[in-house]
Image (tube, rainbow, N blue to C red; front, side, top):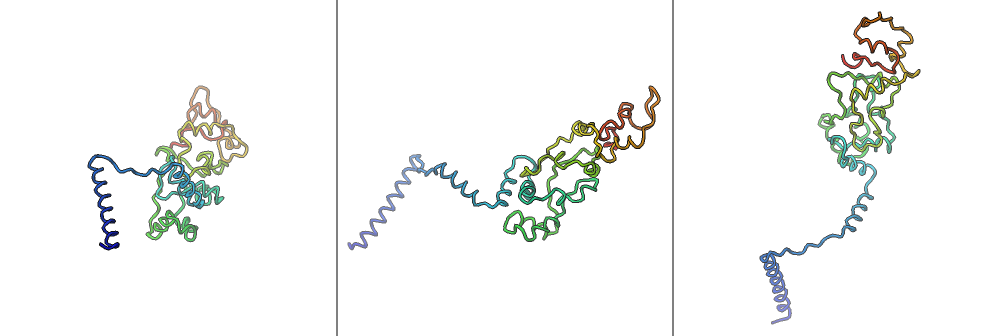
Length: 247
């Protein structure tokens, strides 16, 4: 037998021996040993992968992995847009200061930037796909008052309330969540506050210009306001009568 044939035969026998040995182990109930990766190596690999992320990619991951607030169809990170890009609330929610309801930004506003920015990012590609199909992004609603409550943003902003007084530290939120309870007691806590001279068109300001008519002793005043509330007219920062919010 030639050397070449001897080598070929030896290799064949070796493969057969390995195959038979593996079969015998399985038949005996033994499991082949699986190499376990060192946790320290895994941690280092994860850290290296995170280090390679751009700020935008890290913001997307943070929005996707956040544990508060409803998951959105596109992982929009408020903290990144406010802190990294120095965008104000009014840039996207424009018109809220003169609207009866909160203004959600139109898709055209998003595309105004993302037509040229972030094209390599998967969420931006999805955003552009919505635009190409002529479909709005089906955002999950975060804040909602009951149907029997009327809340207008315009008078609150006109009186100088900052967005974070009701919406919390949005500049720190990777995913937006409901920060305030929206309960009546929470609203009244602010409405019952001390009036400020900078307030505009509140009960306090109106009471300075238009004196409330005197109430006949022992009788409910003319109108729809309960007696106790009418007695407090002008003493609080904002209206506390029922019809201010329930009508």
